[in-house]
Image (cartoon, helix red, strand yellow):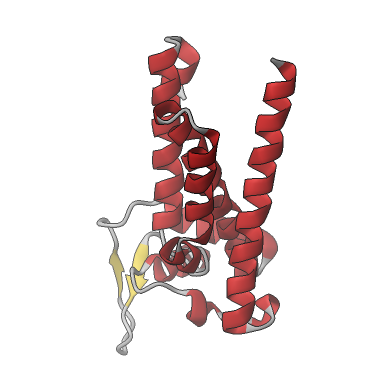
Amino acid sequence: MLQANNNQYKIGLIIFLAAIAVRILFLYLNYGNIAEIPSSAIAAPDGYLTVAESLLAGQGFSQHSASIPFTFTPQTERLPLYPLFIASLVYIFKSYVAVLIAQIILSSIIPILGWQISQYFIKHPGVNLAVAIALIIEPLSVYLSGILIAEVLFTLLFLAALLYFLRYQKNPGYRDIIL
């Protein structure tokens, strides 16, 4: 049992490192040096970066207009978690590169979650590994990991919730259903 558990951790680590390597390679091929990527190159058109910049400027959850005089309108249609995620990392590390690195790390966990979820439905290790490889190299998720867009965080949280729900279905307990 302990040996099988160690193999699971090793495979999960390999999947994670491969996903990080693919995402960093993609960013390097697109932008060159990651430390020199401007925030405008990694900003998604969904407006979360603008809301995060408003938070950093002390304007709250708002989006400023481009016309003069500047007006700040509340952004109640956007959920606050992702702008807070961006703003807190930029506040701590003083760079959008930190947010990009965090997003790459989070998006590299998604193939591990997909691999673990597939084990609940398919018992063939080769198929489960194929699921992980597909999630590692899937072009849209690799692209989305390189821009500041909420879908990465949403997908990660959704797959984690699904995994804990499946664990609860297999072994009912308070811990898994709460998580």
